[in-house]
Amino acid sequence: MPAAPMRNLYLRTARPPFAAPPLQGAVTADVAIVGGGYTGLSTALHLAEMGLKPVVVEAGEIGHGCSGRNGGQVNPGLKLLPDEVEAHWGADLGRRMLALSYGAPDVVFGLIEKHGIDCAPARTGTIRAAIDATGIAGVRALVEQCAARGGPVRFLDAAEMKAATGTGLYLAGALDARGGHLNPLGYARGLALAAQRAGAVLYANSRATSVQRDGSGWQVTTAGGRVTAPELVIGTNGYTGDLWPGLKRTIAPVWTNIAATDPLPEAVRRTIMPSGAALYEAAWDVVYYRLDDEGRLLMGGRGPQRDARGPQDYRHLVAYAEKLWPQLRGVAWPWQWHGQVAVTQDHFPHLTAPEKGVHLMLGYNGRGVAMATVSGRIVAARIASGGTAVVDLPVRNRLEPMPFQRFWRIGAEASMSWHLLLDRLRGR
Ligand SMILES: Cc1cc2nc3c(=O)[nH]c(=O)nc-3n(C[C@H](O)[C@H](O)[C@H](O)COP(=O)(O)OP(=O)(O)OC[C@H]3O[C@@H](n4cnc5c(N)ncnc54)[C@H](O)[C@@H]3O)c2cc1C
Image (cartoon, rainbow, N blue to C red):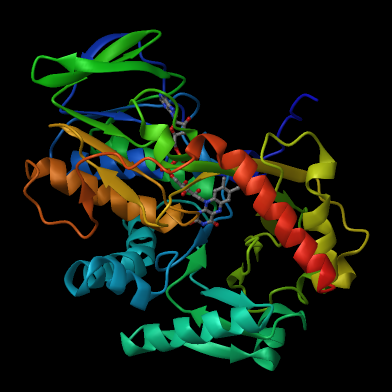
C-alpha cells in the first residue's frame, strides 16, 4: 500500500517563511554542513557568529526532517536519569553533560529571544507522567536526582496531576520548570534566518550525493554543484543515508506519529492541560502531547515502522486522547503526520570525529529540540577552536555501529507487539 500524503500542521502554522535556493555551481566555505535541521542550522548560526563562513546543503526545504515535524517539546535533560549519566561517563564529564542538557532549554529560549524568532515559545514546563508503579518510581527518582543537583523539578501527586492535565489517569508526575514548547518548524526557519543574517549560506532542495577528500579538506557534491571546505559537518539524524560509510548503522531511525485537532472550542480547551505544560509519559511507548498557542491538541506516539498509509495509522492516538479526555469524542483530527527519530544504542547523542575535519552529530533519542540546538553550538565551538575546545559531550573517534542494526525494524515491531500484548493482559 502506498504512503498517504502527510498533513503536517506546521506547514500551515509555522512562521517566518524561509526559502533557500538550490545549490548551483561550485562554492567554497570554511565549513560544509549537510542537513538543514536544528543540528546543521545551529552549527551554521554559531559558526557564522564567530566569523566563519558555513554553507548548508539540505535535501528538502529547511526543516524538512524531524525539525519541521516534531512535537515541539523543549525537554530538559537526557533520556537517562542524572545518576545513570554520571555512572556511565564519570563524575566530571557526566556532570558537564547534565549541565549541558538540563541547561539546553535556556539556550533554545535564549536564541528565540535574541533573534526574535516567531515560533510561539511557551516556557510552561515539561511533565513526565507516570501511568503505573514503574513510572512512579522513575518520576520519584528524577525529582530526587534533579533536586539533589538544584534543579527546579517538583513531584506532583495524582490530584496535582489531575489539576495540571485535566485527566485522572495519571498516578504521579515530575514537573520541570525549565521545559516548555514551541512551533518546531517556525523555530527551524527562525534559526535559518538568523544564520543567514549572520553570514551563513543555505541551499535547499540540494541533496548531498557524495562527500570526498579534496586535498586537505572535503568536497560535498549535489546534483547542481559542489561545496569545498576544510571542515565537514553531517547532521542528518533519522534521515541519514549512505553519504558517510557506516553512519546509518549507528542509529535506529524509529518512526513516530502525531495527530492534531483544529483549535478546540473554548469550553473543551479549558479542560485539557490547564497547566499549559508539555507532557510525555514514562512508558514503553512514549505518548507525548501539548496544546499549541491557538488551542489545538497535538498528540504524539508510536506508529507503524513505515510511512503511514492513512488515518488508520493514527487511530490509536485519537482513541488514547479520548480515553484521557472523553469530552474530545466527536472532535475532528485533520492533521496527521510522522517522522523518523534517531535512537542510539546507549541512548546518548553521538558526536564522532572519525577523520581530521569531519564532525558527525546525531542521535538525540527524541530530545533534539533542545539537544540538537546545543550540540550544533558544541560542534561550532570545536571547529572554531581547531578541535582543542573541551566540550560537554563525549567525542568519539570512530563510529560505533548498533549490533543487529540491519534488523532494527523487526526488533522495534516485535518489542511493540510484545508490550501491546502485556498492556492488553493488564487491561490498559
Ligand atoms: C514526530 C516527531 C516528534 C518528535 N518530538 C520531539 C519533541 O517533542 N521534542 C524533542 O526534543 N524532539 C522531538 N523529536 C526529535 C527531534 O525532532 C529531532 O531530534 C531533531 O529535530 C533533530 O534535528 P536534526 O537537525 O539532527 O535532524 P533533522 O531535523 O531530521 O534534519 C536532518 C536533515 O538532513 C537532511 N538530509 C538527510 N540526508 C541528506 C543529504 N544527503 N543531503 C542533504 N540533506 C540531507 C534531511 O532532509 C533533514 O532535513 C521528534 C521527532 C519526530 C519525527
